[in-house]
Amino acid sequence: MTEQEVIERIDSSLAEEFELDRADMTPEANIYDDLGLDSLDTVDMVIVLEGAFDFKIREEEAVRNIRTLGDIHRFVLEKVTQNS
Amino acid sequence: MSLESVVVTGIGIVSPLGHSFEQLTLALSAGQSGVKYLPELEKIGGLRSRLAATVEGIDPQQVPRKIRRSMSNMSIYAYLASQQALAMAAYPDAQLASGRTGVVIGSTLGSTESCEKFFADYFKDYSLERMKSGLFFQIMGHSCAANVAQSLGITGRVMAPSAACATGCQAIGYAYEQIAFGRQDAILCGGADEFHPLTTATFDVMNAASTAFNQHPTESPRPFDKDRDGIICGEGSGILLLEKKSLALARGATILAEIIGFATTSDTSSIANPDAGAMLECMRLALQDANLPAEKLDYINAHATGTNQGDAAEAEAIRQLIGDRVPVSSVKGHLGHTMAASGAIETAASIGMMLRGELVATRNLRQVDQNCGGICHLQKNRSEPVRYLLKNNFAMGGINSTIIVRSRTHD
Image (tube, helix red, strand yellow):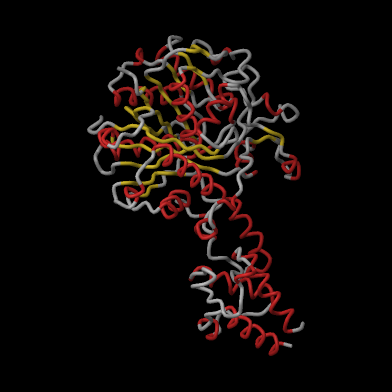
């Protein structure tokens, strides 16, 4: 999977789950302030990403530090690279 | 009992026959049926009844995602009906968070469909790793009440009575008592339920679901009719806004009707089979609560679901109460049995009859069964004033409930 394909899968999964407007989904977008997610949503975000990429990330410390969509992209790309 | 007078100032409806109080009232007056054949029920082994009265035309997306994520369909119905009731009453937004406005809304269960989806996934590998955060809020017993309070910012009492088919009636009664006692100034009250095949199956296994009219959906259920063969399950929500009368008048609200009596009792003779004597006692207690002799009643809206035993027992109880001197009808021939919502939707329907001065006949009642005789069955709509009405709802588990309603123009 190319980097762009990974990012597309992340964005489409999150857009579907949280009914987001793709135009708002820039790497700089803060997932709380700009995309409107909250603590319950971040629980579901982890489940959605685990389902989309078939990995386990719930216990990872780095997940708790995610603030922007770009953070998610970088985190997932790193995981995908590690697992490949 | 009434320390404070309690009035109805708003009504919200999501039902198999329309999504507003006006739509429901007009559909009932026109004799429409909300019952339909559901082909998907053919796939369920052992289920003989293929009919249901489902809600159509509700787009869940009209509810904002953050509100909707903790809701199954029943909470969506309750939320939309609550919004309607508040709008009809022109209830001040500032009162919602005053602590003096409450919510009493019940359902038979939490969402069976949400449970089914969860367990279908869970049984694949017995893993909880895919469990979404919203699941619990959809399956908890007070899902509808909590979701309505949360989404509308209501900070007073929240209760979720659950007594199957008597739920909506009990919710109105408990709300009435809390306002009468001065504990709350206003309460959104009623019931909600969503259709699931398991609900129909519950009655089918007890031979209480309608199975003979699968090819003629709108001819069933048939309350009090000699050819009745059981319940048809439905869904929806009925919500009433009850207010302390003095405050409602002070803010210039339009009064729709007044709740003046309530009773609910436990019939311990059987957990499943109704008893006419227990039903009669419940009606008498409600009339006593209203300080109203049965002779003053102008209309009785029966629970009558179309079951063999239930309809006969209720007819016997009404016969003992008032003979054939008060017109009686059931709107389940139109609406099916909307379960926990039925008490509130049917109380709303009855208030609609009161406001229009038109009593709606029992749909599909062609020939009164001999076991249901001796009472004044409405087989045609009748135009006449209604000052006082009695509303029954009875439930599995031996739960009986009755409300007495007075017209806003009773004097």
